[in-house]
Amino acid sequence: MFFPRAQRNIASRQLRGLFARYPNAKLKWFTAGRGYTSAPPQNGYTQIEKLLLDNIKAAGPITFASYMQMCLSHPTHGYYMNPANPIFGTQGDFVTSPEISQVFGELLGVWLLSQWMQAGQDQRIRLVELGPGRGTLMEDILRTFSRFSSCAQSIQSVHLIETSKPLCSLQENRLKPVAERLGADIHWHEGLDLMPAQNDAFTMVVAHEFFDALPFHVLQNTADGWKEVLIASSPDHSAAAETPSSPTPSSNAPRFQTFLSPTPLSRILSISSPRFTSLPSGTTLEVSPVAWSISRQIAQLVGSSGCALIVDYGADHFFGKSFRVRLHLSSATWLTQAFKAHTVVDPFLLPGECDLTANVDFAYLREAAQDLAAPLGPITQAEFLLGMGLEQRVDVLARAAGEDGERIREAAGRLVDMAGMGGEYKVFGMVGREREMSAEGVWPFVRV
Image (cartoon, rainbow, N blue to C red; front, side):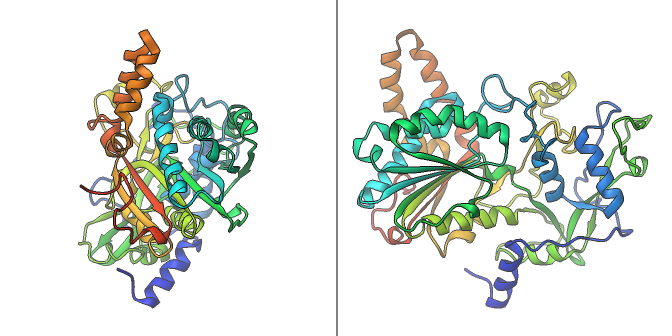
């Protein structure tokens, strides 16, 4: 299902990077549903908070996308850019699936390898990972490939899409030794669009917990049509602290507020999927044109020869209020207690010092890719890993590990727990269009 050509062309141009700047206007405050306000735990500003308030004072309200991009990707103070933030691993803020068990990366690697084998094994392999973190997942994939001589000899290059210099250093330290043993070159790029074209390679793309951190816009359908939720400073904080030594407010009043405004993006994004056009008044919609664009870029890379796996929070539908702060293990005690009590934690909390995330609309990714590659799924992480032989692999590892066997089984069990990671994470795949009409389908995305 596609838009009429005129609408599709307009939406496509917008989704490829046309952004507008909105004037600071007196508009009705956003009160429908749950409006967001920020209540700081202490009077001090974070560095990002100062920048945000100063920008709003100078240029007017900002979008959720601008807020998220500033908080996560500011060159010096962004959450992923600041080397003071220990983000991943057992000593960091988050323990991801590859950090829990090596089996996760091994089984993703086996699936990628199987697609190359079915394609004929006659092409050199180009491996691409978006947001590689500490490099754990890519290390496990490369280690898996090294066990198959024909595959190991065919790996030409590894490409890592990363904007954080501190993370690039971690990745290099971890991956350089294994890549050198395989005779593969490692390259870093700040964007997928900066990768060189290579038509004679079989391109494998992996993105784990990447799309959930991409900037998104929040729209709401009203009686007057679609409007965008914009972020402004609250009256008590309209004059931001311009320097670190500036005085801070005397109260813990909210520092940001949201309101609705008709914007060029609200008109464009509301027709960017045929699913959005019939949504009733009152619907709130989180939509990421960046995610749409990157999904399409992945499809362009693998559509003629290649495959891709995307693993992330989300589902095969849109979300309206999934934007949230992810737990920062070193945060204040009250924040930890709030998460344990399952209370709603302010998404404007400690800008630049907490991770931000929103669920992925996999249907949106599929719509962006489906005319270039054959989309697969999504299915749950549990379905994917069990279908790829997790139980058998864990049995082998546990028997060989002796006293550590139970720990290995417990860690792998977390990956497929339907009440946790196994159900919350989804796996979405892409293969070349020539596989689309395959009678047997692509395992384990086949429904039996």
